[in-house]
Length: 105
Length: 358
Image 1 (cartoon, each protein chain N blue to C red):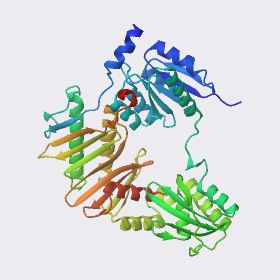
Image 2: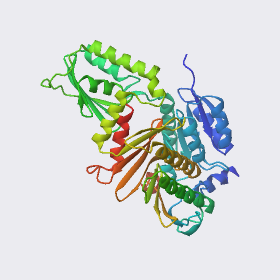
Image 3: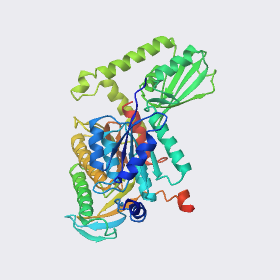
């Protein structure tokens, strides 16, 4: 069985993929529209939405005028634009897109 | 007799573990090889004793390799990490490197690849921890300068730390001038010497350089070393009480004005101590936003294994701000929209933040 496992591990990686696409959330972080793959759980997207809305709200409390916010991680960029109450959020993974020598061969 | 390094391999396939154990235990440095069949088991072993190197598979049940690496990066920052996987995927490669792994290696499938892999592992096991200046590890600037002066060299040392650059002029073993961030002479020299790491290069000497430092190099080095020691061992009482000392305040306000920024707020990442603010009346409110944003970023980073937050940027038509972690602090820098004309707000913030605590 271990022998077969070596082959199956090559074609069906189940390591978590980074979400890519955009989503629109209302003031309660409920998802109104999304182009993110359904492989990403709604719970994760809801969490991202609510965190972003919290940052917009907190910025208002701190008297920082802010309509757009970008969180730049090492392998993902999250850009959020405030809408009336809600937000539109863009998730952009940073890929190198370089073809490795093995793939070329 | 030198201590043997400890190496940990994590893979859910016991046959693969046994194969690697056999191969790696015969490396020239003869490391002690430990194995774990799951991420949680590996983390428990890492907590129990210090390891030099972790070899981690990506595809594992329950906790995948990226999750293990993400936790390792935070919990064991000195641990060297290698991903060994059969998953050929550019996204995973990018993310693994974003999580700070030293090496991403597809499971070796030929004798030649295996040989190269073993050589890389051996090199990583033998590599010293990074400290000091690149090129002369474990040596501080004081040591470098002493070497140059004792050798009676004539050179210009150009030192870089993040976005900062400083130069020290030495003629015939005499320190004659220093320059950084718009200051010259002894003040600039002390400033440069407070940088703990960075890169340096030797430039051709400039004998025509105007002399601004007249103290003998030994006296100056001793004086500076003493000041640095005192600042490390005993932070001023005024600073402990939340009132930055006058010298620092003047220097920082000058930096703020020179950079053209509106305000800077800085706070500790971990301790949550009293935040410091310059150019703003709303230090506490801004610090609260930093805390919320930093928590949100840590939460998202952990859930998605995106690697650490590099910076956050936002604002509206007339105002921009950049939040940036730097060493043990997080900074929030506010900019008028017209500032940073010749560079990006991110670069301008990097430069300001690099000069802040040095």
